[in-house]
Image (tube, rainbow, N blue to C red):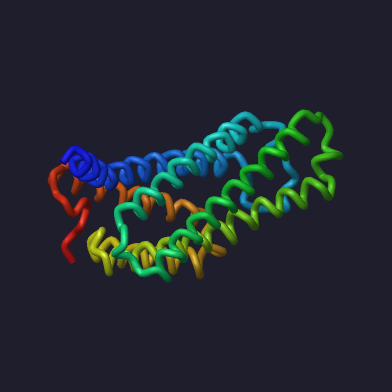
Length: 228
């Protein structure tokens, strides 16, 4: 009887854990992106003047990303635990794989940005900043974040929205919104400099919805199942 009560209590806490982790991930990542956006130019071929004027702000953004990543891993784990055996193996695999690939690209881009600060931030001259090494690292970080990470985020949104429709863990309108924004990331991210904010904003909307469902019906056995 005690074991059954413990399992039931753990299952009821899982959706709320996913919601809180999703909200933390969204806030931290949006804050990091905002700091980078106001400090570093969009052009990957820029001269690197921000290393002289904004190194602390960029360093703060880079240091926020690991904590956002931890919250995102918690978000994925909580969602997978709630889905249990109801999810399709194919979509569940793509869901898990795309989430991890997004996180890997995000961490890699942040690591390159941090390496640039360590390598070039202390130099007073512009010779080193205009070197081929700087431009290669700058372009690599740009491509990892704005091409590969964004595309993996789009795939994650598509698979999550599909699982939401078939398992009813979120309302249909939220899944349709996920499909629409994912299409924007997959095909329009090259033309929109702020497209990378779409993913954490969508996670934030989904997490707030999950939390609201939990607050309204904390004793529901179905967690955050939503009507179509």
